[in-house]
Amino acid sequence: MKYVILGNGIAGVCAAEMIRQLDPEGRITMVADETFRPYSRPMISMVLAGQVTSDQLPIRSKSFYENVRIAPVLGNRVSGIDVDQKSVMIDNGTSLPFDRLLIATGADPRPIKAEGLDLKNIFFMRTAAHIRNMLAVIPQTQKALVLGGGLVGFKAAYGLLQRGLDVTMLITSGYPLSMQVDNTAGEMILDELRDYGLKVRVGISVEAFDGNGSVSGAHLSDGSLTSCDLVVVGKGVLPALSFVPRDKIDIDLGILVNEQMETSSVGIFAAGDVAELVDISRKTRWVNAIWPEAVNQGRIAGTNMAGRRMSYPGSLSRNVLRILNLDVMTIGQVNPPDTSEYDVISTGGPGRGTYRKLVFRKNILTGAVLINDIEQGGIFMGLIQNEIPLNVPKEVLLQPSFNFKQLMV
Ligand SMILES: Cc1cc2nc3c(=O)[nH]c(=O)nc-3n(C[C@H](O)[C@H](O)[C@H](O)COP(=O)(O)OP(=O)(O)OC[C@H]3O[C@@H](n4cnc5c(N)ncnc54)[C@H](O)[C@@H]3O)c2cc1C
Image 1: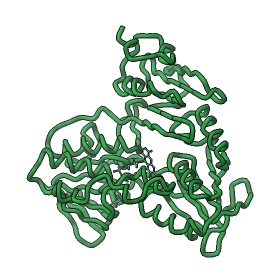
Image 2: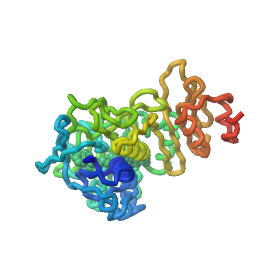
Image 3: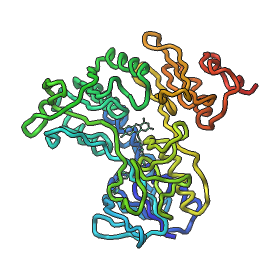
């Protein structure tokens, strides 16, 4: 059996390991444009902040490819897939035949529309190489602009502050982490960031950059001009699927997969940030571009590719973050549609130090936002993931003493 895996991120790595466990003889080839050994992508922001060195990023040993008996084709981009002929085209002019294919190419930073984007010192933050390039110029810079208040924008801003830069974060929406939290939690996070010395401007974006070779300023949507000598664009990500033939493989935002992580084309699978599948809490298809999902989806895809049928009930968004002095945990659907089907209860909020919001569809918990007091987050996650109907009043879940035993009546 010939397996080809596109991408050496965590989804591709987990799939390859599962395949090797179940099929000791199959030939596995892994194609990726990054040459660095498989590494922790979330941790690149810690390299920027000076908390770890890039030597600490790898998540597998130097002999990973040898141990799992993978033929690596690194430093090469995939340019196309011939679905009928079952082969993958590589930009070095070669092609690779496959019996089973996994697309695990992750995501690319979402581009922005602004003039002057080709000026030096404007960076994305997705790869170890992006961080290396940023660190090379930081000693010559003083004033940074971070575009975007999501996970990447927040981590970039924190890292640059640690490097001693004067940092301003520009957020188009009204509060940071708007994809992860609701407006109350967002307000608490905003206060925390500002107390720490980060300048945050909300409801604003960049229209054009100024500079002579390198960036020196940005024209903002309110008509003002602000000076800066380094910019990080962190406006979210888009699945990396430009090489996928849309007439042969169904795509929405991501590549559509079923419960076995198989695409609409038999024998071709997708997993991780590039894949779109049913979201357990939202009950609709969603791209949940997070690390634990890439791990699970890669394993399920690898298992099915090797011929052992295994289903995945769906993906679930979740994040645990330490934001300065705040522990933040979010799970599932935190901003439900405004319909009678949903019930929301909450306690705490700005000025109170803690906040807990729970979202229910009928008597099933579908989402939670917790700020500080996150100890019961694991129970909430179990309830959401397994869609367990509640047999106690909803308010019981907000009590500080709430524990699993109370659900066993
Ligand atoms: C700064 C940062 C912080 C993050 N923090 C968190 C966090 O706190 N918690 C969390 O859960 N998640 C976090 N994430 C997201 C997490 O890193 C991703 O969800 C995860 O890495 C996805 O894994 P993947 O294997 O699907 O894709 P990737 O890790 O993106 O791997 C895909 C690989 O495919 C390669 N590739 C792409 N296109 C091609 C092509 N055409 N040809 C050849 N190779 C190609 C890429 O170069 C890459 O090596 C963070 C991400 C970033 C960037």
